[in-house]
Image 1: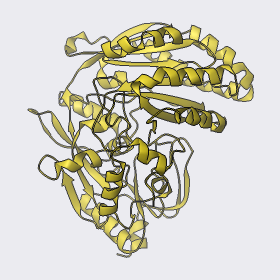
Image 2 (image 1 turned 90 degrees about the horizontal axis):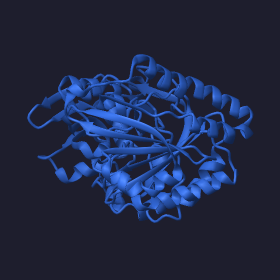
Image 3 (image 1 turned 90 degrees about the vertical axis):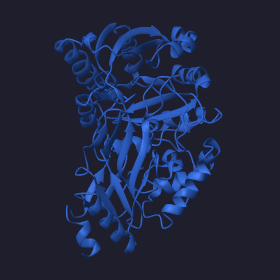
Image 4 (image 1 turned 120 degrees about the horizontal axis):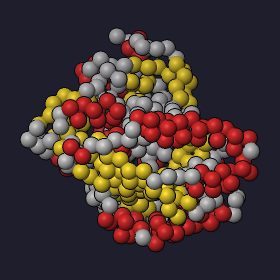
Length: 446
């Protein structure tokens, strides 16, 4: 079958955009392989005819890491749990499986992911390949749970890295940026199902920063949201519970009111208003911050970790050594207090353990994350550029691969101890850059 025929089986010259609308590609050829063998044939044929291949999941990255050049592979037919071992808790999962599908499936097996981020709309491969993480100083990002990777290389061959097959490459392939091959399956080290007792409470930025060291160390999962132009903070502390009989979720009405109506519908309306009248943002942030109420509930871990997000925004998140968080956040507050920019979205702050994944933002160190956001109808450029400039003064600042940044390959090489090893592996596995695109060229070099 000729390359163009294969490529256009499921679509001809489509326009693709990511969730946030920050990346657009026109005249994209799309193919949805039915299985791994079909995928391998598509990659091999594309490579032989000089075409670039880029798989895509939910398109939830804000960067152009998933931007297609010639052929886009959609993996929605390569999904589901392949096998699981009840004794070890290891689970083999196809790469195209969405997290919001995987988590309930694991629960039915009596298992759970050790940690999760706060959005579950990504595919497993998209989340792992971009370095998705949650919070909790005793837990790594999601790629830290990967113990095996199966993927299709540029020549169409299928390889597996696990305990028995080149285990030294698992830390590279587990968070591969889409640069090494098309991942078709992950083996995950899961844990027995557990509950989270969630406690959310208002506070002030000074109070949180004063007690930050002990709070982060003593909590299973701690994060907080700071409202720019105010001193108001919402803290979130999640405590792990192994006793599943302690289940005590929010009443349905409270969940709908807080998480659907207030956090999404009303917040969307406020952002539309403040886009037209931005000078009202500081006052509205004060009102919103002071209107926060305390709540406690207990639910399945994945239902507590993930929150519903319907308001579209732009996001940038930078990872810094944990001890650098207070100073960077204080500098960001000073910038907002000057009102050089007015910002309606809260700033999110999280923490994770060190890991050994080569391209992980937490490689080799306990890490703090500061994420900034701007409503999609407002210009984010000046705010984001100011934040990136501040972070460049922090030794070892690393941008989240799926969130907006302007860090160059030369800067990233200094920040990542295994950067050159990863690039060398990319050169070995994909010398012709079959899986390349402009974003990967900018962060990994040509």
